[in-house]
Amino acid sequence: MAERIAAIKSQLHAKSDNEVFEYIVNVATDQRDDLIQLVYSLFGNLSDSIGHRLQAIETVSQLHLALTDTFIKYALTVLPEVPEPMLRSARSRATQIYEQVNITAAREFQRRRESGAYGASELGLADGAELTNGTGKE
Image (cartoon, rainbow, N blue to C red; front, side):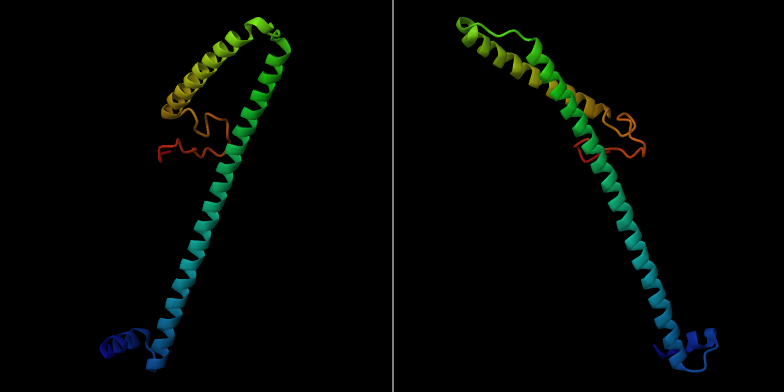
């Protein structure tokens, strides 16, 4: 250890071991400060990225809600009322259709997710950040 201090002392043209110690402490402190700034910067970037992604998810959710609301209002205004004698069979048939529509929608969603159709550029988001597709990959 004494040899290392002597070598640094000669490289720095320091007058004492205390000057070498102060130099080492200052260098270490500066490096630590740089690392702290880097960590804060990385966390800030991560926070901004998460914020953009959450905003994109919120936008898509609001769009979905608006489309669903519009469709339900339209369907309720144009569908005729089912006569009482046909109500039981109509309800059974509607349940079957509902289940089939949900299965078809789930399959289509899976197909689109696997094809990358839910990327930010495909959704019209300006920043170009990809949304995860649920498989852990972007």
